[in-house]
Length: 292
Image 1 (cartoon, rainbow, N blue to C red):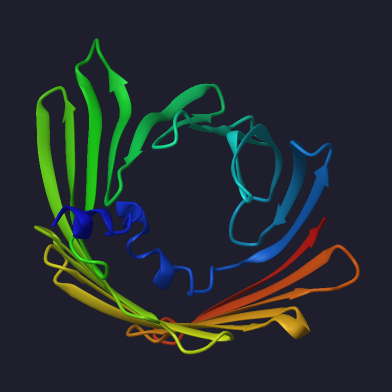
Image 2: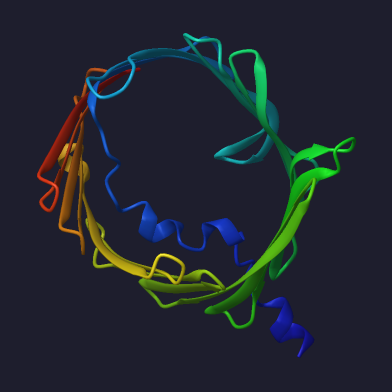
């Protein structure tokens, strides 16, 4: 029994349960976006982003990323520090560090011009066959307010993982807690995930048809809103053409698509996106160019 338990894999984190399916859906784009990435060294990179929009305010963002020298794997090094500031002075920053081989911690800070809007700290522990995470958000000792989120995900068999989430919030005159449970079953080339909580349910199905094509279906049901929605999405990857295409269709007759093309040998990536809502007769499209 001990040998069987040791053979169970780590299930990943609670937040990653639906990620495979969600990543297949195209992201809405509107207007024009230009991104310029510049590597200053092996560990430091800066980027400039200009967004021009007709439905929202145009903006400029300056970002910086530092990756430390503590190499965990060929693709991971710590600590990681990321900062982004826009033309109004609002800041988003986060620090991620691998403290030990099993413990990872992250701190997130967000300001809106001169006011602190959000800050949170979380710690993640990865055991042999389970992952536990605790997040503390906007704690205020004087007011006795804050949010605590606890996640736990356990491998039951090599294919089945079960877990839960507990969200507790408190502020003057109000406090409450919400609990969710999740189950994920993985086949050789597919994954099915179900999350249930008092407010409703969330289910996703991910299937990798071949090396080029991946498809996914998402179902969201809300008891409070008495509403259910279904979204179908797919991703087509053509490496030889340096082309990535994503498409989606939901039960509200919203159709979306995005195309990403790397203009090799130039360090340029072109992105096009469009969404149309047939029920509301609304259409929006966007164009993006990444340099570097």
